[in-house]
Structure formats: structure tokens, C-alpha cells
Image (cartoon, rainbow, N blue to C red):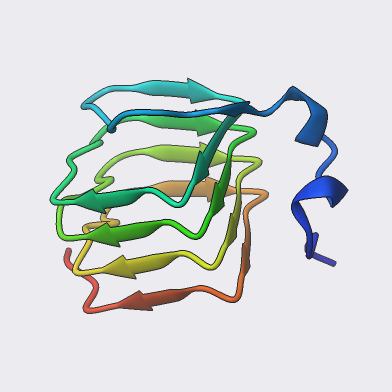
Length: 103
């Protein structure tokens, strides 16, 4: 069963707030993305390990070729964002939406 609350995550205590944007080939480990807006952000070929996304919006841009491992998304909106060739392992997506998927 997916975790419903941030505090339920086995890695919750290790999460650190993330500030700023996303970058190509970025490496994000135990990052908590909260109330972020990523318009046109290109984080292709990035890795996200034990990360949490809460109340985050992605519009355009992309995560093409990125790896998302042990990630948790709640109240996240992905609109027109490229998810092509992404790898998702042990991901939980709660109360979120993906629309106008771009290849």
C-alpha cells in the first residue's frame, strides 16, 4: 500500500528542503520539493533517490531519461511534461495528475 502521508515515508527523517530549480543530469538524494513550480524546467537524465514532491507543478519541460527511485508524489501536477524513457522504481503517486503527456 502506498504511503499516504509524508511522515509515513521510511526516509522522511532524512529529507532536506530543496530550493532553486532543476538541472540537466542533476542528482537529487533525499530532497523534499515542496510548493515548487517548474515551468519549462529541463531535468533530463537526472536521478531522484528517496525524494518527496508535495504540492509541486510541472508545466512543459521534461524529465526525459531520468531515474526516479523510492520517490513519493502528493498533490503534484505534470502538464505537458516529457516523461519519455523515464524509469520509475518504488514510486508512490497520491492525489496527483498527469495531463497532456509529451513524448
